[in-house]
Amino acid sequence: MMYHNVALARQPIVDNKLSTMGYELLYRRDADAVNADVYDQVGATAQVITTCLLDLGLHNIVGTGKAFVNFPRGYLVNPSGVPLPKEHTVIEVLESAGFDAVLLASLRRWHNAGFKIALDDFVYEPRLTPFVEIADYVKLDMLALGKDKFHQQVEALRPYNVKLIAEKVETWDDYHFAKLLDVDYYQGYFFEKPQAIAKKASTVNQMTLMHLMASLMRADDMSISELEEFVGQDIGLVHKLLKYLNSPLMGLVASVDSLRLAIMLIGTEQLKSITNLLLMSDITADREVLQGQVLLRAKHAELFAKAQHYANEERYFLAGMLSMIDVCVGIDLDDILAELPLPLEFTNAILERTGRVGYTLDLIEAYEKNRPIKSDEDMKTLARTYAEAVTWVESFRATL
Image (tube, rainbow, N blue to C red; front, side, top):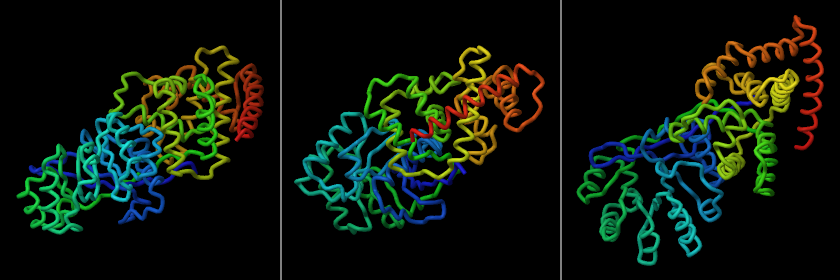
């Protein structure tokens, strides 16, 4: 099937009034996992980002607060872009990142790009002053430091313009001690353990992503039509891009009724970032047969519309893909479409088969299932365009 279960955990970060200012987002293999069990830090970070951004929806996880995301050295030093909203994102630099000149230069690039930076499990010493000066938050591990060293760290960091977060606050005594030292924020089991969030999500074919990324890297001047052709290979990718556009954090005011418009709104650079993240998160599954069926229906609908001289035939390709998305994702079709930035008449065309789009989908499905077709002309056109669609799908998938 073309869906799988995704999960991550979140743990709140609270202020002195115990109001939540944000959440640390933590990798989880599945909803039942208690610990992260991270074997690949870069892949884990990519999966956290793709899960919260393209599957669960960042706004559903952090609301108007901030998302603290662990970034390993490999990601910080070799960034491919992060399609997370800068005003809601805090990059957590792990204690294992290796505090050298290369990392400092990389953090300055992130800082100049508008991202907030937090130093996680940090232990201050004078040589690390440049890192403190560029940071917005410093997280001090109460459990690892103990009260005396924690106090020393707070005093050492007080001259700098950073907000201090006491983490691993396990008891009332820990909280009271940190509060007496006038720490800015708190995180730990005393307030709440990490809570897992899970949902079914569409999968994306890895070969499709590799093919798309190679093309994006090879040519910066690819046309929208070429990008549309690549992206249209995979219904899972189309679904994720539409969900990305529909996030309240994106501020999209228009509705989208074609893949071409979706790609134009996202832009080439963001498409590169999303493609790279999906590749790194390795959330693919084998579903070649169903993928072929989806592509065939989508192309058949587009070719039929073109043969009938209907305007905007690209709308029919997208409608054909979305008409099968419930089978791919394992969620009711009306619930899925409600999550996407589609015009109401376009949604109705898919669900209720209204208008020319709905009429075309009805004919395509009737032809697929060998049901009677009233019009002989329609039948001839369906047969011809179906053969063309089969040839196109076979040729298209052969390139992968």
